[in-house]
Each structure stands twice: as structure tokens, then as C-alpha cells.
Image (cartoon, rainbow, N blue to C red):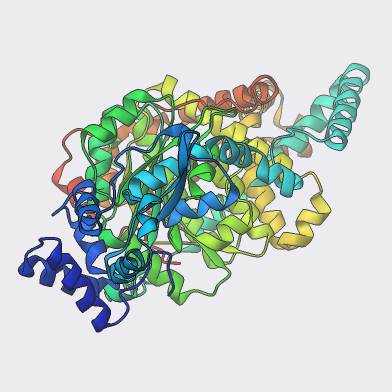
Length: 633
């Protein structure tokens, strides 16, 4: 597979490269070891050497400058580079950049490759005047200068591209004029109905909400009774020479406390460093996080991308901004607190190779490890178990749309760019992107190798995070329903109905939960106060439906989550499952907060704070070496 990183070529090319490195002063045993790695990984000796940690990039290119008898430029002045569209190529393969200075002729900075150095030496000998127009710089310095010079243009494009190119898929306009008209009309009719015929209006509302709630429950019940297939063989590609460059994006904001943990987790990824392109995406004004990363001096395969401050200040905008410099054929997205399975990239790569081109995304299961810290974290773990280890694999098996999780997504880079990447105005960008991929003919599947996460442990933090999620799901549903007929045609009628149950149904059930409890309680009181022969059929049916809705929801929540958990996880939850009714009430509070916030602050990103993990139990520490999802895609 072709990559932007350059291959090793043939043996003669490696031998020529080895001679150059020897002339730079590197020892033969080191060159031989790096040569074997280059053959194994399909790269160059130079690339293996620079990513191995045996030499600093600055020292290497300074030695290259001495060999060529050219000046070495360590720091590129910010004002010396003029922005243009062609400059973006230097983000992916930084090798040359032009400096402008009013007091002297332009100078071209180059980062020469060892395998082509003979051609450069020959050219300098034939044209000695070139020495006045050339200088040496590191690829990192050239890339950083290109990021700075084009920052304003790129951040504006990150914010506006989806809205300008695919406006019907963008959440920038919260509600279209047509949606506003129909919403206002329905609200006016509802108010008139309640004022003129209050009893009939209450009964109609009761019937409609109960049936919608019941319909939304069916999807979880279907996943619960679906069962599991036997585990299939997990494909893993062990041929490093066939591995492409893999880009890993991690968006961080005020995450200085978890930076050491994050870098340790990324260092455990089973992928050649010479084929890794890790980008830590930070807000340019987040000095604390940037300083924490630099203090740990990560390897040359890890790059800090500073996103200029521009509204909206959201994770999807930051990811879209960094995507402009992605070198990989595949892109993985992680959160700052994630601890992905070391073999997750290999499984994703193997699955992409085995899957048809229409499979553009793979979702890894997310597993909560701080189950015992609080009731909220225990119930959150049950919820994640149900979603990532049961519901999503079932949807994947039947080729239905997947509302992606916000982390541990693996994409083919080309389709991701083709559909417009992440919507900077959608605060649940993962669910939106899953729907958009499906609407444009792509599919998502699930994986088995997991990512470990910590859940919020306090009600206040959980409520802020869940409010943002509900607001994003509302945005996603409104985007889908701008042209419902067209959306149904793009998705297919069955997939469209599943999305209505999955996204719309989840919103309805959360918003209607207090009303259903009220209807259930009032019906029970009325029935107890009336003789049995006076209880009408409609009243009995509605009571039964409400009973199934409330207690069926609680039971499905527990059963679906527990069905996918290990025995150890179930023991750690203990009796905290009894807090499910409170959890559902808080979910409803978050949903209603999201409705009001969608009107007042539609693009506000409620940041979830993260802390480093405490010492893990032996069982939790062993999780990364196993596969926990019961349902392979």
C-alpha cells in the first residue's frame, strides 16, 4: 500500500544510504540494526534512526549541514514564510520551505534525505551559487513553520468547510425555517388543544408518549434477546513491511494532569514508530497542556498541533484542523484519558484489509475501569457495556447506521475527508459522523480489542457531560430530519426507522420519563380508588404499557449491560445497580437541560475534567491483553 512516508526502495538504495550515514559518523553496528528495521518496516535507515531515539533530529540535520557545507537553521522566524495553498504539502512530507526577508534574497530551507544526498552533492558541485540560496532545517521545524504560516486559513476552513460544501449536513443552523414553521405550528395547536379540550389533550398526550416510549424500548429488547455468535478468529497482520502509516489524533484541552498517562498508553501501541504519525491536538492558548507535553520530550513520531482560537471551541473543530496534516492511510481518534489495547491498530488494519472499501470506520468497545468509585461510575459502566459490547455489534452485523463513540474510532482517511470530516458545530460529533458516513454510502463496523476509560464519578460532572451529549443528539436528529424523505431514501427505509428508534427514541424516552412516571402513578392511584368493574379497557391498557415502559426500561438497562460484562465486572458493581431509577431521572434532567441549552448556547462545549487513574486491580490491569467484546463485526 502506498503511503506518504516513502518506502525503502531496493537493497542498493539501502546500501547507498548506509554509506552516507557512515560518513556522518554513525557506527556500523547501529547502521546494520537500523537497516534490518528498515527492511522489516518498509521504510529507510534514516527514518528508523530518527524514530529510534539514538540521535536527536537537530543533531542529525546539523551534521548533514556540515557534510554539505550549508548553513543550518534551527528556528524559522514566524514572519519569514508566506502562506499559500501549496504549503499544506509540507505538513505531510516536510522537505522544503521558502524564507522571505526584505533585506536579502529568498532562501530555501531543505530537509534532505540520506538516500538522495548524492544527487544534492553533485548539484551543488555543478552549481556552486546554489549555496547562497540553500540552507538545512529539520523536518519538524519546516512542518511547524508551515502550520504557523497557514494557521488562519486552515482554521477558517475547518470551521466553514462542511457548511459551505455540504450545508444540509452541517449543524451550524440549529433549525431550518421549515423546521421552525412546523415546530411552531405544532406547539400552537398543542397549546390550543390543552386550552379548549384539556381532558382529551392529556389523554392524547398520554397515549402518544406511551407508545413512542414503548417503541424506543423495542430496540434495546431486540439487542437483549438477540444473543451472541461464537467468537470468530481475530485477524492480525504481523507483517510489518506491509503496514502503512497510521495517524493517531488526540484532542486535549486543559489535560496537563493526564499527559504522562496518555503518552505511556500511546507508547504501548503495537505499531512501528517509523510508521506512526501521532498528533496531540491542543488549543494554542492552552499553555499548561502544551508545556506538560514538551516537558516529557516525546519522540519525533509525536507532534503537537496548536489550533488557533476561533469559535466554536469544540473537539470536532480541533480534529478537523489537525486532519490537514495527517500522513496516514488510516486515522484513529482517542481521548486524553484513554488506554487503548496495544494491538488495537493491528486489528483495525487487518479488518480494513478484509472488509470491502465501503467500510470506512471501525468502532472499538469502550470499557469503564473505575466501576467501584461511585454509583454514577458503576451505572455508567453498565450503560457503556450495553452500548459498545451489545447494541453496536448487533447494529453492525445487520449493516445498520452506528452512532459512533467519541473515541477509539478508526477511519480510512480518504472517505473521512470525502464526507467532510467532523462537524465543528455538532457537540456530539461522533454520532453525527456515523450517520453522515451511512448517508453517503459508507458503513461502520465494530472491533473486539477495547479501550479502557474512566467514567465521571460525581453527579455534577456526569450531568454536564450528559447534557452536552443530549444537545449533540438533538442537533444530529434535527440535521437528519431537515429533509426526512431524502434522508430515508439515502439510508433506506429500514435503516431510517432504526435511526428514529435509536436517536429519536432515546431523546423521547429521556424527555418523557417524568411524564410516564406521573401517568403510571396517577393511573395506579385512580385504579385503586375505583371498583374493578369501573376500570376501562383503555385505562388498563395504558397502565400496562406505562408499567412496561418504566420497569422494562430499568430491567433492559441492567440486563443488556450485565449480559456483556465479565463476572469480575459484575462483582465490582455490587448493589449499585439499585440506583438505576435515580440514574434515569438524572438522564431526564440532562435531556431537558440540553433542550434549553440548544436554544441559548447551541455550540457550547461542556468540558469533562479528567484525572490520572489510580492503581488498577490485577484484573483491570490485565484487560489490555485480552479481547472483551463478545460480538466481532
